[in-house]
Image (cartoon, rainbow, N blue to C red; front, side, top):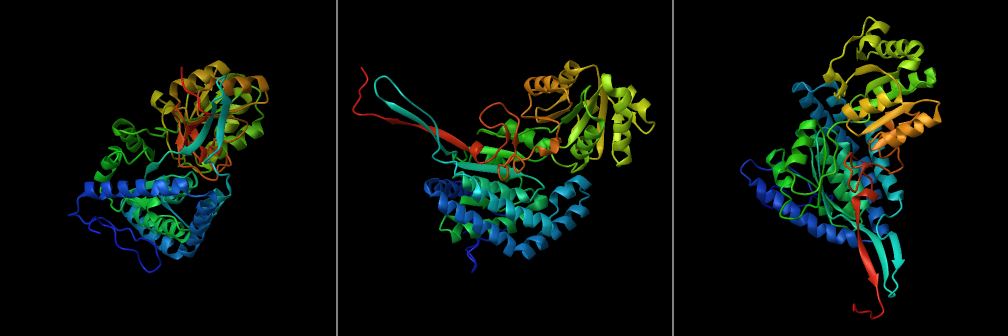
Length: 441
């Protein structure tokens, strides 16, 4: 094939290689789009048992190919270190036996999810006898553009397949080798189950021009784009895409410690929300402490963060609580650090906390810690974020933790999909109308 993909190897996995510099990127991408559309039609009509068999085959292939995947990842990490990537970026890029095993397990868990296709979402009968059904159907071809996380190759591919869609995956340059090996395993599982390998395709080039081709829609062959990466990537996708986008621009998440919060609970939740993994979009970036409990809660919470190695940028009250706190600026309240840094502010009651979150937040994930059920109910009702949490860590903003098996991303828009995008969110619907010879007068 002249567009940069080699023929199948003996193990039936399509090897994906970097496109030759002389190749026409537009032709490469158009061919991927045509192949994805053809595969999507076959996958959409496949029985759930066949899709599940492919998923289990993918999980087995990921385990069998672990040495190859980890070797590729090791080279990606060497290059990332040479490029002086940040510690949080390197953490997102890194794979080890434990993470790879979890990746395979997540793919297998998707097979255990109920089949989202064919679900009757609503049904009714009109006075003229016509019976209407709203039925779940695949979206079609989903393009996922991601940066450092190679596990997205497996998560996105598995979720798209389970929901009857085809996937075009564009990995970042930093994770290209790792993603290539993972994609080969996914293709192996598809073909072993008798499904087209083209249902999950990795863009075979690091060339950034491929992103522009995807955003153009590939001549109508892409139905939805999902960007997973930094602000500049997501902003570009949202600005330039000529097809619908599921995305969030920032994960500026808050933990609000209310007046009736238990201090020990607040400390545990805060440390987990901020420091479990600082590079994930559900990591807390701002701590809000109610004036009513600041005298007893602020200093212990700030000290716990500092002692755990987290830099604190705070308002006057936070600086008075510990001399190690530096002054926060207005920019800090709106910053997604993705690092061991947090902004801390005291607020005068629930209304002030909600106002702060609405002004500076990104409508991703926000949590309240309180024993006051009425205050919690107001927070959950009035904070307009995709995920709102009472008495738990913001790091539960993850499709796996929601029981979705995995997620293709977090969406903060207000149309169709919102929050973790799992198999149900990757479905559309159509109407089936059953008659008995009715004609319209």
